[in-house]
Amino acid sequence: MRFCPFAQRVHLVLDAKQIPYHSIYINLTDKPEWLLDKNPQGKVPALELVREPGPPVLTESLLICEYLDEQYPLRPLYPRDPLKKVQEKLLIERFGPVLGAFFRASDGGDLEPFWAGLDTYEKELSRRGTDFFGGEQTGILDYMIWPWCERLELLKLQRGEEYNYDEARFPQLTLWVERMKRDQAVMAFYMEAEVQAEFLRTRAAGHPNYNLLVKEA
Image 1 (cartoon, rainbow, N blue to C red):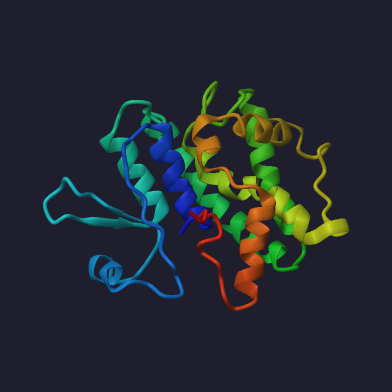
Image 2: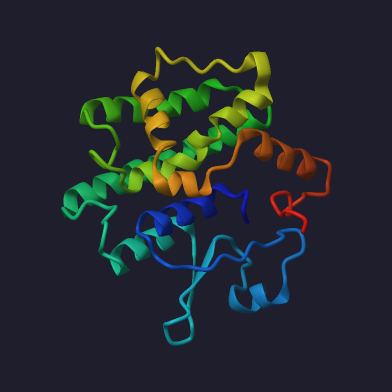
C-alpha cells in the first residue's frame, strides 16, 4: 500500500541497495483473492521471492529488510559487527512505542509522548557524532525510523497551532531530517504532506482513495 509507512521501510531498503523489484499496491479495503492465496494473513508489506522455489512470501517489514540486507550484501545497511548489529536492532525495537505515540498524536492525542520518544534518537545521534545513524551514510536505523519522521510535516498539518516541534530540543534530528530528504532512496519514495493528508481525509470519510497518486491518461 503506497501510503503505508511499514511498506515504505521495505521500499527504502530496496532502493538503497538498488535491488530490482516490481511493486503491486493493494486496496486494503478490498483485498484481491490472489493476495490471500499467497499471503493468508493479507499483511502488507509482503515480498514474494519469485526466483526461489515456491515461491515464498515474506511479511513483517523488519524481517523483510533484514533478509534483504543479508541476501544482498552490496551496500550493507546493518553493521557487520555482531554486537553493533544487536545494538542497532534494539534501537529499532525501541522505536515501536514511538511510532505508536505518533499515530495517537496524529489522531489528536497528546504530542509529548512522541517528542519524548524522539529524545532517545536525538541523544543517540548526538552521541555518535555522525551525519546519519549509519555513520557518514545512511544505515538501517535511518531507514527504519524515517517514515514517521517524514510525516512530521503531516503532523504539523493535522495539528495546526497545537504542533510544537522544538528545533532547540532536537538540533541533531532537525539537521538529520534535512539530510535524509536528499538521500536518493528517500527521494524515490518521498510523499508530500498534503498528499498524505488528503489520503487520510478520504480514509476518515470511509472511502479511502488508494488511487490518489494515479494520473489519469
